Image (tube, rainbow, N blue to C red; front, side):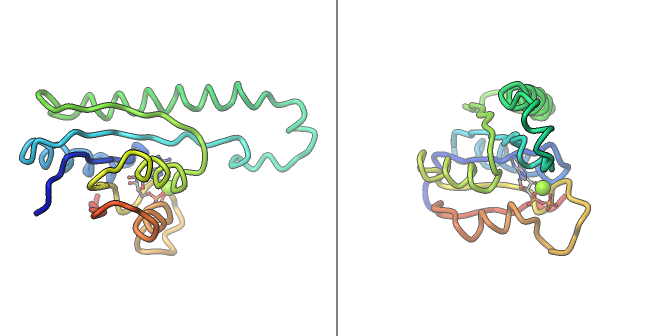
Length: 150
Ligand SMILES: Nc1ncnc2c1ncn2[C@@H]1O[C@H](COP(=O)(O)OP(=O)(O)O)[C@@H](O)[C@H]1O
Ligand SMILES: [Mg+2]
């Protein structure tokens, strides 16, 4: 196995992403890797705010900041459940389109592995693997993407 210096773990709070986080910690402990946990908060455009009047009156920055705050709390609680002692890790909370942001961060920061869940929260199980994971597998610049079942 190649060196696993840096692992990126995208977390949406789903059971699969929690499992992925646990696996990442195990691997990090074994190979001395650093972990970055990242969560992507949705932007208002993704909430179906198609209505023009609604958009005009809506404060986008407030919505984004509020979503980021909620996601940051979620991420802290997921990390809080991990056996993380002795592991070097950091956290990122960004907003935008999840797959795009995950791929962008993976490219910018040269992660060796991405470890993520097979599914998230979507009720539409048209695909065996969730759409965010599909895109990351297809477009990731990392050496490997590990997909963890819930
Ligand atoms: N907003 C997000 N921020 C960070 N990671 C995410 C986000 N959405 C999905 N993921 C990652 O992708 C995995 C699969 O989720 P996804 O592809 O969205 O499946 P689904 O279609 O079932 O929601 C999750 O377990 C998580 O690791
Ligand atoms: Mg999802």
